[in-house]
Length: 249
Image (cartoon, rainbow, N blue to C red; front, side, top):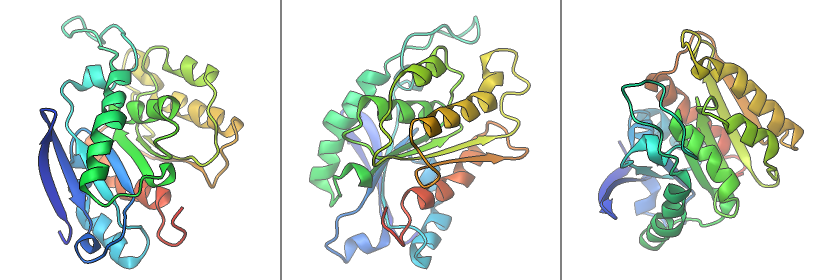
C-alpha cells in the first residue's frame, strides 16, 4: 500500500480513513467517499485502486470506512419484519444514521483532513444494505452527496421500490453506479429473489427521471451471486466510473 489507512474512534464508532499516496506531498484537497461496513471494500481492493491512481484512470480519493453499530437497523429506511422467525425485525434507523454521517462525521472529517466539500466530489457507497442506505442518502441529503456506488443494493427491502417509484429525484449533478450479479436471490423463497428485476426496474425509473448514460450506469455480472467478494471486485470499477481522472467529473 502506497497510501495510508488511519483507524480512529469517533462517537464510539470505528472509522478507517484512507489517505492516497500524494496526500502527504501535495497541498490539494481530495474527493471523499463514505463507505459502509467499515473498510473492507477499499482495503481488500487497494492494490487495484492504487494501480488505477498511478495509471491516471482514477482520481486519488480519500475513503472513510464507517463501522456500523447494528447494520440491520442503521442501513434500513423504516421498520420491517425480519426474514426469519429467529431474527429480530429491521430497525429502520437510516435517517438517524445518515444524519450522523452528514451532521457529525463529515464535518469532523472535513476539519481534520484536506477534503473537497463539493457534492460532486463527495460520494457514498456500499454493498447490499450498504448500497440501500447509500441510495437512500440521495433522497435525504441531495445537498451533501453527488456520487453513489450501489453494489448489489437491497432493492427487495419492503416498500423500497414503491418509494423509488413515487419519490422524485433530480438528476442534475448526480452520478450513480449500480451493480448486481445475475444469479442474486434466485434461490431465495421470499422478496430477495427480486434482486435482479428490482435493480433493473430502479435503473429504468432513474433513466426516466433524466439520468442518461453519462450519469447512470448498470452492470450485471453473469454468474455472480450476492457475496462480498463480488462487491470488492467491482468497487474499483465503480470508483473509476464515478471519479474518472481524465475529466474530474
